[in-house]
Amino acid sequence: MNDISIKVSVSSRPDKAVQIRFDNAINYPTEDFHYFVSDTQPHLKLRILNSAIVGKPEGRSFYYDYYWQGKRIRHLLGQISKDNKSGITPPKARELVIGYEALRKQGKHPLQGQQKSIKEISLNSHFAVWKEDADIKPNIARDGTRDGLDAKFYNQQVSRYNRHIKDTIGHLPLTTLTTAQIKKWFDGIRKETKTESLKCLNLAKQIVNHLLKYNEELAEVLPNRFSKIDQKKLNTELANKRELQAVALEPEEFKALWKACSQWHNEVEGLYIKFVMASALRGINVATLKLDEIVKKGGRYQVRKVMKKTLNTVRFTSTMEEIYKEVLKARKKYPQPETGYLFPKYQYNQQREVVAVADIPMSNDNIDRIYKGKNKKEKQRTVNGVRIRETLKVLNSGGIRGIAQNTEPTVGKYGLHDIRNTYSTICDTEEERAIILGHSIGTTANKHYTQKDSRYFDKFADKREEIFLKLIS
Image (tube, rainbow, N blue to C red; front, side, top):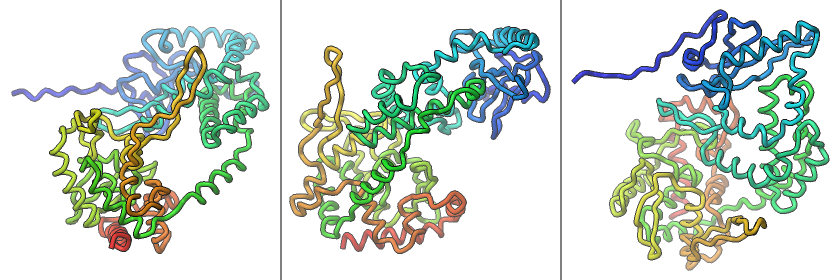
């Protein structure tokens, strides 16, 4: 059999001005940094982002590069495209630059015809550009590496925009949007949900920063007024509230929760909570753990992955290894998953029987169902143009936590994250706390730790097991 391989033709990075064509431009290689390719048409340049993917137009945009009144300005023309609907073609980009240069040579502002369009720019008009940016939109490259935001977080941001920004201040021109209007909008969300108000403010701020970053002409005349809203007081208030809510389980409560896991109707889901308890990892990080991420090194299983933007190496304790092997056996009792997630997302019928496995990892809603037994998140629906809030209750059994309450009633006040707080209070040093919980303790220090060999992380695995045995014995 002939060995047939498909290769993507990659054009070398031009080191001098070239006539930029679509077919060649999408194959210019990426570097560790952004760079510009000059067209034979003076003042026309193509910017290649370090996140651009060879063979695709995303991350490759035309700019008009010129000087006006002693200042260098780069004006974004648009993403390179085969047509002028989804972006801008090389011939169209040259046509625009020729027109701009004709005005500039006459002593006129080259973008005087653009002033009307600048006044019409709003959050809504730029949101479509922002969410399609290669640095923003989730994508999995051919080599399996992920780019853009986390898919779940990205969808949350899009949903947040549609709920709180699109129909309120999203349509207002940014050139006329005042700080007072922004403050009124911010305070309106703040009255209902303080945390959500900060997330909305930061999202709007990021979208405007994105606009100004790639439109230097607009950046000259438009400040980011969302940055003027004072967040310090509210951030401090919420931080204090989180600190007050952070509590640690007593050994008796921890043991009751551990025993309750074995009484859950789905053995794999019960082992999921046990794994969280034995590892002190975040629930969502365990839910997204894939089988091929678990490897044996130096006689011990370990996983090395990015958890909340921090690269962590987690060496398995004896308890974690025992749970891991139990999960592999228990999974065979249920429909086999199509994905390689250690803890699959099961789908049930009304009799609580597993009927299928979803081809996606468990979400926070699924985790809440297992641990709490119900979802307390408020849902919104629109009836005759009126938004109505309703609370969706998935189950009312109390979950694994509810089972534990039969022997230790006080367990009901603890969330799954409080397991991490429990480990944190028992750790002796900042270094132990950082490695066991997967916290970042400084960029340089963090890189230093992640380059250590397995023996370095073994001592933290042993400390994790020591804490666990104290709680469970």
